Image 1 (cartoon, rainbow, N blue to C red):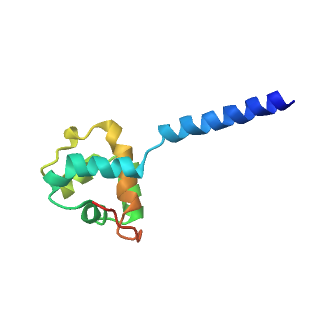
Image 2 (image 1 turned 45 degrees about the vertical axis):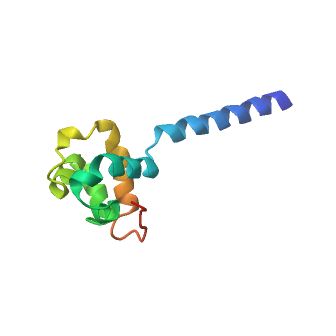
Length: 107
């Protein structure tokens, strides 16, 4: 019985690590913004994220227009320059630090 419970617990613990790595990450989005977008945008991550509220960022993302919105805010950054794998992380960063969130990033 103990072995079965230990096995189930281990499986659940292992599964929790796998699912958390598959999800987007605010810190990764912040790092991506700092490395890839800060210079061409000419603004800090705080100013970028504060361009919209959380609801506005969510609507833009759900409509599939996140890359285009980055291009509107930062005309030097073309939508095709943003990898699809970055979008969810950048969205989570923008959402976390949106104008109505009360959070301020360190970049």
